Image (cartoon, rainbow, N blue to C red):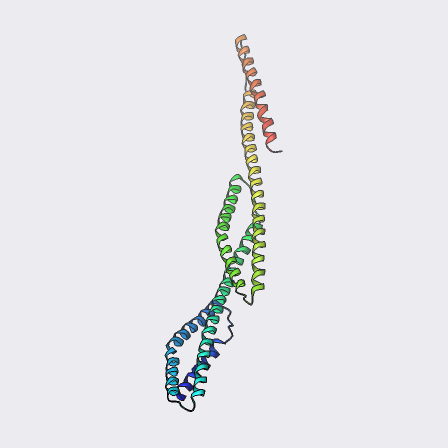
Amino acid sequence: FLVASAELQAWVDAKLEFVNQEIAVDSIAAVKSLQSEMTRFNTEFVSNGKKFTEIAELRDKIVAGSHAQTEAVNTAVEDFNANRTKIEELTKERSTKLDTEFEFQTFRVRTATLQSWIADKKAFLESEFTIESVASANANLKTLEAYEAEAASQAKRFSEVAELGEKVVGASHGQSDSIKSTLEDFNNQRAALEELDKERKAKLEQALAQQTLLQEFREKVDELNGWCDQKEAWLKRDVTVDSINAAQSQLRGLDAYDSEYAAMNTNFESANQVVP
């Protein structure tokens, strides 16, 4: 009994020291390493359960034989049982802390990734753009639509990170205040991105409208210039009038031109109204 109890006591002391170790990690890999240690510890703890049983059986034999050290033996076994229970409780506590730490380190990695995404998209939304045609306005609007689709897909990731952060805070992690601050910053930054998106879209839609009007104006100007060139050539042509009929024919042509000119004045006015 003395030999077995000495060996068991040494094992108990070592395991109590292990489960009482401070958890100090700065990465997911470090947490996984400690979790692997806990898995090995749990396996060893279960396999050593028979040693506690053997000690109890030896105690029963000693008590049955009315040995002089019966009281001391009973006390030793009670201490072993108490320590065994303590190790089980500390093991559960340590495992829970490691799970929480894993979630915190995961939270850190994911927030860093999302923070980088936010910075990249903020730079995009604040970038200058030059619109010189309807095509370039539409191209910029398509790029913005692609961003909006990406932002919508990222919403799930933000939600998952928020849930993870709240879970870690709920577990009373030491960095709870920092986590709350990070989540609040994320909400503010996402709101800022939404405003930048609205502003950029409004500017692009305005630019598209302007370019559409300008394109319409240029088309009307080209049409009018072509008409003017044609009519100028017609008005400058040599006219031969050698009869009353020929004169009347020329006058009718000129009347038709005057009517066409009056109609074209409407187009002139329309072109002037296209671009204020």
